Amino acid sequence: MTAQLALDEAGLRRLLHGLPPVDQVGADARAAKLGTRSIKTSAKAQALDLAVRMVDLTTLEGADTPGKVRALCAKGIRPEPDQPDCPSVAAICVYGDMVPTAKAALAGTGVKVAAVATAFPSGRAPLAVKLADTVAAVEAGADEIDMVIDRGAFLSGRYALVAEEIAAVKAACRTNGHDAHLKVILETGELATYDNVKRASWLAMLAGADFIKTSTGKVSPAATLPVTLLMLESVRDFRAQTGRQVGVKPAGGIRTAKDAIKYLVTVNETAGPDWLDPDWFRFGASSLLNDLLLQRRKLATGVYSGPDYVTVD
Amino acid sequence: MSKTAAKNAAAAAEAPRSSVRKTYKLYIGGAFPRSESGRSYTVTAPGGEFIANAAQASRKDARDAVRAARSAQAGWAKATAYNRGQVLYRIAEMLEERRDQFAQQIVSVEGGASAAAYAQVDAAVDRWVWYAGWSDKLSQVLGSANSVAGPYWNISSPEPTGVVAVLAPATPTLLGLTSVIAPAIVGGNAVVAVAPDACAVPAVTLGEVMATSDLPGGVVNLLTGSTAELAPWLAAHLDVNALDLAGVEAGSELARELEVAAAENLKRVVRPGRDHDWNADPGLARVKPFLETKTVWHPVGI
Image (cartoon, rainbow over all chains, first blue to last red; front, side, top):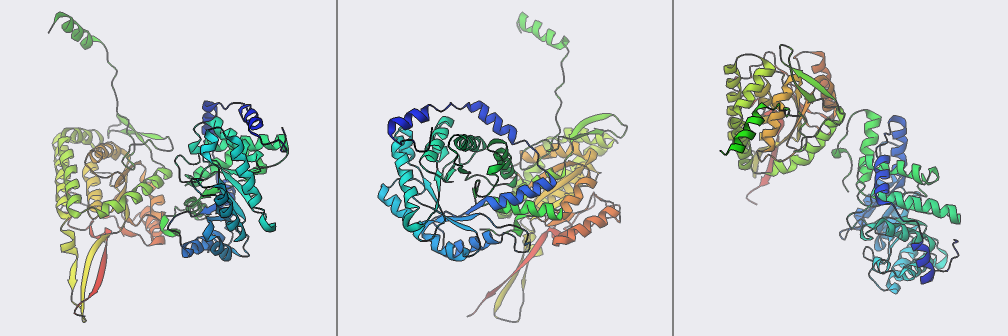
C-alpha cells in the first residue's frame, strides 16, 4: 500500500473494504478505560497548558460579526490577560468571509487562521462552488482549510468521487503559491458505523488530507472518545505504512477540561507522544477554553473559580 | 381466600425476609448521587447505636453542587414570586405527610422524647408555610419608592444575590435545616447546604421531599458530611455569592477563617449567633442578607 496508489473506484473499494473490521464493543471499552486515568498536579498543569495550545477556538454562527471575530481573536492570543505564562491557542476557526478580519487581528501573533469551506456544514454544492469557496478563503489568507466530505457519496459507496473532491480541494489550497493545511471533516455522526469511520479516515488520508477531523459540530453526536480513538489508530497505521504523518482534530461536544485530558491520554496511548503537539492534534471547541482557564486558575490559586471570571463569547 | 393463597400467606409470614435498607446519598441538581469520593460515614444515635451509613461529601461534590446551583439559579429567580411561594408551600405539604417518618428519624439521631420530635416537625412545617407567605411580600417590605430632588421615579427593589452556601446547625436537625434553607431560596437564590454528621438522616429525607415538590432541580443541593472539611472550599469558591455560618461555633477559629476566605470575592456572610433559639420568630434576619437592592432612576415629565 502506497500513497501513489491509483484512486480509482475498484482500487479504493478493494483497499477500504480490505481494512480489518473494527470491534465496536472493544473500541468503546478501550476508550472508557482510557477515560478513567487520573492525571494530577504538575502533570495536570502541563496537560491543561498543552490543551490550551491545541484549541482551535471556533465561532461558526450565522450571527457572527467582525466585532465578535476580533474579540475571539483577542481572547485566542491572550486567553488570560493577567497571566503571561498562559499560552495562546493554536488557531481561530471562522467562516470564509471572516478570514480577512481574523487575519488582520492575528497578524504577527503566531495564532493561525482556519476557515471552513466547501459549503460547510452540509457540503451540498457543486464542486466548482466548493473550490471557489476554498480559493477565496486561501486568497484571503487562511492558513488552514476545514473541508467537509460528501457523506452522501461516501455512504453510497462512490469512494472515488469523495477522493477526487478531497484531492481537488487540496490542489485549491495551493493556489498561487499558497500552502494552506487541509483538514478533512468526516462528520462521523452521519457515518453510522465504526467501520465507516475507519474507511473514511483512510480515504481522506490517501487523498491528501493533512488532518482528519471528526465533525462539523452541527450534527449530534459530534466528537466522541471511541471515534477519536479509531481515527488515532488510523493515522498511526497510516504513518507506519506510508511514512506520512497526519493530524487528528476532534470537534464538537468537548466542553470540559476533564474531557480534554481524557483525549490527551488517548492520544498518548494510541498514536503516541509524536501526536501530543498542536501541529498534530487539535480540539475544535468554543466553550472548552473557558473551562481550561478555570481549571488552570484552580491549580494556581487553590480555590474554585466561576464563570463570572471568564469572558462570555 | 382460597386454600392455596392462605397457605402461601402463612409460608411468607414464617420465612425470614432480608430487610431493604435505604442508601443515604447526596442531593445535587435534583438527583441523588453517591459521593464522588466513594466515602461514607456511620451515623449513630446519641447512645452509640448504628443508624445508617451516610455519604461523606468531598470538595468535588461541593464543586458539582455549586455548578448545579448556579445553573438552576437564573430560572428560579425568574419564576414569579407567587410561583415560588406555591413551591415552598408544596414542600410544607409533603413534609406534613411524612410527619411520622421525620419524628421517628429525629428521635433516633437526636434522642429525646417523641413529643418533642413531633413538635420540631410541626415547627418546621409551619416555618416553610411562613416563608412561603413571604415570597410575594418581600418587594413591598424591602423595596421602596424613593423621593429624589429631580424629575425621576426612583424605585428600589430586592433581587436575589445568587448562590448561597449554608452551613446548617447540628441541632435541631430538621428545624435548623429548614430555618437556613427556606429564607435563602424564598427570594430567588439557589442553595448549597451542608448537613453535618447525624443531621444527614433527616436531611436526605428532606431532599426526597424537595424532589417531589416541584422545586426545580439544583435550587437546593444537600451535602452530608463534615462542615470543617467542606466549609473552607465553599467559603473560598468564587462562584458562591453568600455564606450562612449558622452551623459554625460563634467566635471559633473556623468562623474567622471562613470569613477571611469569603472576603476574597466579597461574599455576604451571616455570622453564627451564640445560643441561637431556632424556635423563635425568625423575622427577615436570614432573608435580607441574601438580597441585593436594585435602584432604578426613571426620568419623568420630559
